[in-house]
Length: 75
Image (cartoon, helix red, strand yellow):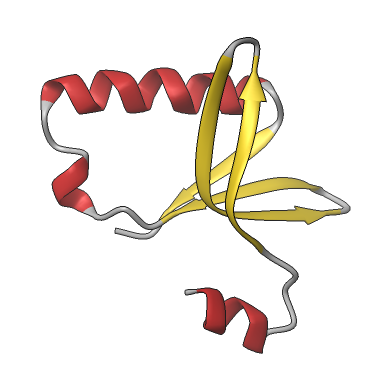
């Protein structure tokens, strides 16, 4: 994914972390552009199917979105 983004001349940060209040969130890829901030997640479906994981992901996504992150998943 990183190589594909770089090939398109997209400046991207790998393993970027965001701190919201006392919580840290690690993003697979972070892109900063004039229209906003983009989080690209590439964990795969197997990491996001358990009920506990879904609740954790939903909370994380809601917090990131409230801080103006746009989240895209590449499963």
